Image 1 (cartoon, one colour):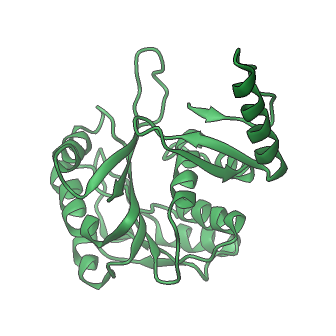
Image 2: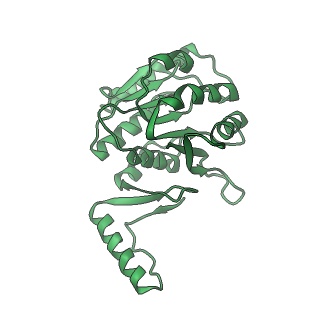
Image 3: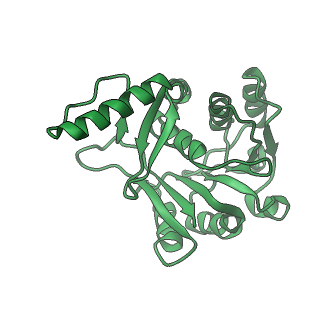
Length: 249
């Protein structure tokens, strides 16, 4: 994971001028309790509070591990939020990721509404898609004190699309994992993402070939988005999280 942990002293480069600049940056970031994450292949570096690491560790689960959550936090930090922009999450399951994002916004000192779209018990689960649990979602957002900004919309994503405003700052797509559903979510919701807004796509993994094909078909062509980051398991790192982050130009 390409993370610069500023709680440790940086390695000393051979060039004295580079050494001075690196030490100055180290001291600045440390004084502000910040860390840096690098998006690859874009090379963009995002500063996030050190507390984001603690939140990521706390809310890590089998759905999203700590590394993936940390990059989601960086996505939230990277967008220039204003009063109209919202987060839209397609597929929330029991609300763990929604609560995590709300806590990250607390760390960032921002109040941003998080609209979570999920059919919950109306959906019949299959081998690729679990069934969301509305009661567990409500319990989680309430017990963590974030119910005022975490807003559930109990609907299938295609039915909810007409009422979702075109003011999305960050869009998380983690609903249906079949090709037709992922592609439909991209077609319906990506145009609603604001300029400089980000799309965070979970499960870009060979275990979910429909997700991989839909993402490749939609993004890997000329269009209004660029890929900021891709993370996927390799032979050398088989446990690495699998996700893609794209940005609207």
